[in-house]
Length: 238
Image (cartoon, rainbow, N blue to C red; front, side, top):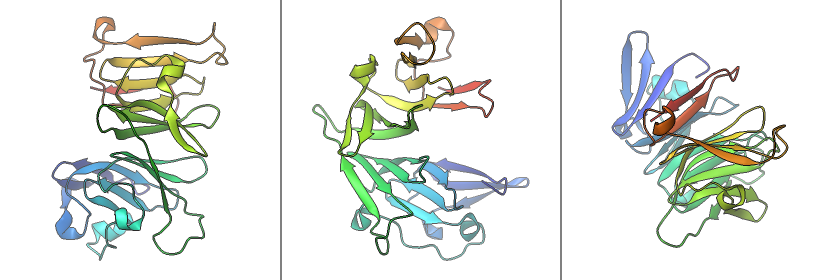
């Protein structure tokens, strides 16, 4: 976070590295749930915690100093589903929450009163229930959402529509998305990393390539990717 504290979300609570020790936090401290699926510090230094039982939004110091935490944010506040898997803040400051069955968004600039600032977008899919696991914005500012058992979606004013087939992405599960400065899109999937080069990225036209075990990746199962600030290194978690 902004104070240099390392936060780690696990299936058994939240941990904060303080000097040489880890502090542990759970529902006993007011967090919405013990299974921590995603963490986000927004531009106003609000700390968002996505769990299987809703969201917690507070200041980091409130947790570290064991202060009273606000009640969890749940479907009663406008969330689509209490089981939340991913958090993302876009270029306009809007917070996006990926959950089971679709996406919710929170606009800090909204004039809605109280906690009823959440707007939800259900995503229906035949053949099972999807889970939104990742978000990213492409070079044109379009919001993309990656799903477990759903593939890739793109957002417009009317909601989210399927997008993977339009760019030739064969994967049905997208755990992680990276958009680099050249306009390339990187997708972490169950079948390796797929890299999409768009027609306007300065190459020879649109194409999709795959990086997998056959090309040296430690595993085809890619859960997380992180690009460093200088875009010199891409870290791939398998």
